[in-house]
Length: 361
Image 1 (spheres, rainbow, N blue to C red):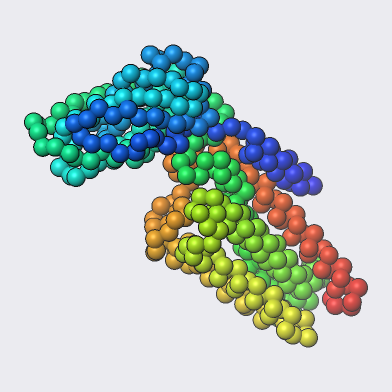
Image 2 (spheres, rainbow, N blue to C red):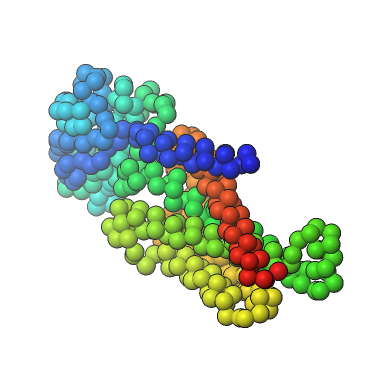
C-alpha cells in the first residue's frame, strides 16, 4: 500500500536530513566568565561551526547585553582563529540595577556566520560605588540574520539536538498505537455478547477475537516504541544532563506507564480460556490507557523537571523548533507513525495465523 512506501521514504528522509544537515554557528563559552565593574576586560569568545576568519575584524560586532536598553559594545576585536575572537569591553562603574552582580548575554554579529548568542555568558560583579550609572543605550541593530537550511545551535545540547527527530516521535507513535489498542478493546467489549458477535461475523466476516488480537498487536508495538523512546531519552540525558537516569519526574512516570502496559501482557497469558482472558485484558487495557494522560502529561508538569515541557512549558515552541527543524520533525512523526502501524499490522496477521493453526477462532 502507498502508506507503507510513504513510511519508508519519510524515515529515510529523516535519517539523512536529521544526521547530515549542519548546525548554525554558536558560542560555546567565554573566558574569563567574570568581570568587575569599572574595569576594562579582555574576553575570548569561542565559537562552534564558526568561520570568523572569513570576514575582517572591523566588520564583526560583539556586545555584552543586559536587556533591550543596556548593552556594551566590544572594542579592539581581534580574530585569533575560525573559532576564537578576542574582544575588549569597558565595564561601567555602576551596574544597570542595584544588585551585587548581573549576568550579561554575549552576542556576535558576523557577516557570513550570522548572529550567535550565549545567554548569561559573563557575570559582572559590583566592585566600587562611584558616580551615577554610566550605562548608555547601545543599539543592537542591522544584524546579519543567516537564513539557510541548517539546524539551530542550542547551548548544552549541541549536536544532540538531532535526537529530536528520533526520541520525540517515539512518544507520538506510542500514543497513536495505544489509542488504537484501547479502541479495539472497546470494540471487543461492545460485541462480546454472543448474538452481537454472530452478527458481526455474518455482516463483516470478522471474528470477535480479531479485536483482541488487534488490541494486543497495537499495544505490543506501542510498548516497543515506548522502550525505544526511553532508551533514546536516556542517551540524550547522559549527554545533556550528565547521567542517563537522574530520577527526573518524566523519566519515572514513563517507566511506570510502560510497566502498567507490561502487566497487560502478563494478564493476557494468565488464562487458559482465550475469550475470558481477552475480556479481562480489554478492561485492563482501557484502564492502562486512561492512566497515560495523568502519568505522561499532567503529573510531570506539577513538579520541577529538567525535561522540556515540564512546569507548564508546552515545548515545541519557537525556542524549541525553528522552520528548518519543523521540515524534518513533522515528517519524522508521520513516517515513524506509519511504520509503527505497519509493524502492528504484521504482528496482528502473524497472531491470527498462529491462532488458526492451533484451532483458536
